[in-house]
Length: 535
Image (cartoon, rainbow, N blue to C red):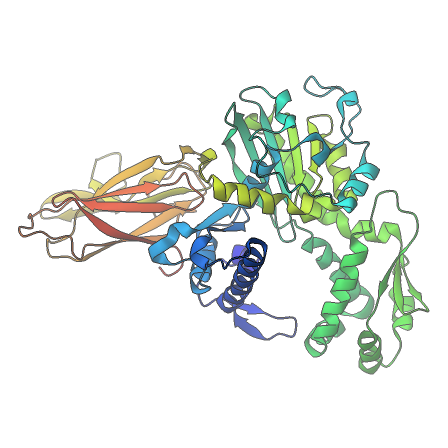
C-alpha cells in the first residue's frame, strides 16, 4: 500500500514499523524478494533432482493494476538488487497485473474448480438452475477444502466455463486482496482465448486491511487512542500477536453467524493497560459504552456478530459502490460473469454483498482455490506474456514542445519570439490518452533533435494527466511524472550531420511503459531510459 499511496515515491522512501522505527522500503522489498528467490530455487532443485540456477528461471512479480509507473519501476529495481534479473537481461523479469493474472487463470476453470453464487432470476439468458454451487455454505466449504489441481498448466487453453461463451462476450474480475481492490473488464477472443481489456483498470484501497483499520479504531474507542499508540511503540511484538488473533477471527465472520467471536488479548496488553491507566481492561470496557463488545473471564474480547459485521461494512460498502460505478459504464453493461478472486474473496460477508448487489446482472463465480488464483495465473502469464492483446491506458501521457504560434488559437502568455520566429511554449504533445485502447506491440513514434550535433544526452520531461483533453503542460491536473533519457554516446559516425534525428518508439500496450530509439543518420541503436522515480 505504501508504494501506491506515496505521491513522491523514490528509492529512498521509508517504511514505518509498528514501534515507529523507520527503514528504507527498498531494503525490505529486496530482502523479501531474495528470500523468495532462494526458497523457489531450492524447491525447484529438490523437485527436479538437479541444481537450478537463477538464469534458468523467468520471474513474474504481480502488482495491483491500480499501481502507477513509479511503483512498478520500484519493484523492478528491487528485483534487480535481489538478483532475480538485471538491467542487461530485463526480459527475465515480468511485471504482471494481479487482476489480469486472475483473469488468465479463470479462462481455464473446470466445473469442479469453481463455485457459483446462486441467483434467483434468469440473467443474460441463464436461469438459476444453471448454478454450479449451492450458495454461500457450499462456497465456504469448497474454499476450506482447498482442492488443488496440479494439472492446470497442461489442460486445454479454454476451460469448460467458456464453452458457454461466444466471441466477444465480456466479464469482470474483482481482485480483492489485503491492501487494494482491482477491477478489470475483459473480452475474450475465441478460439485462442486471447483477452482484450475493455475499460481501464480501476479500484482503490478497499482491501481487507480496511477491516483491520476499523478494528484498531474500535480499540481506540474502548481503550483510548493514546494508549493504543503507546502500546504499538512499547510492545510491538504483542501488537502483532493481537492483529494475528483478530485475523483468525475475522475469517470466521459470516452473514448467518449467531454466536460471538472471541479475540484473545495478549497478557502484555492487559498488563500494560493496567500500568498505563491504573485500572483493568474489564473496567475500560464497562466505561466505554460499547455494548456489542464484552469481556470474557478467559482474557478475551467477546464480539457479537453484529459488531464484527460492522467492522466489515465500510470496506465492503466502498467495494460495492465502486462496482456500481463500473457497471454504469457502457462497456460493462452486458457482462456475462463476475469473477471474485483474491484473499478477501474468501469472506462470506463480501460474497453475500456482491451477490445481493449484482446477482441479477451477471453470474458470480468464485474459483475454488481463490487464494491461489493470482499465483497460478501469474505462472500462465509468464509462459505466454502476449495473451493480453489489448489494454487501456490508465493516464494521458505526453511531453512539452514548442509549436508555431497561431494568433487566436494560442494564448498570448505562451508566446515566445526567438530569432524572429513566433513560438507557442508549453504545448502538450500527446503520446496516448487516458482509457485509450492500445494493442500489444503498438508503437508511438516521435523524433527528437539534439540542440547541437555534439550533444551526448537528450533528457525529455514526461507529463501525465487523468484527463483526456490536455492542451498545455501547465493545464490543471497535468504533472511531471518522469523523464525520457536518450544516451547518444557511441552513435556518432565519421560524419555527423548538422541536424541529427533520433527516432523514439514507445510502447504503452504492456504492463510497463517501454521505449527504444535509433539514430536515423547512422542507423545505430540509442540507449533509452525511462525514469519515473528519480526525475
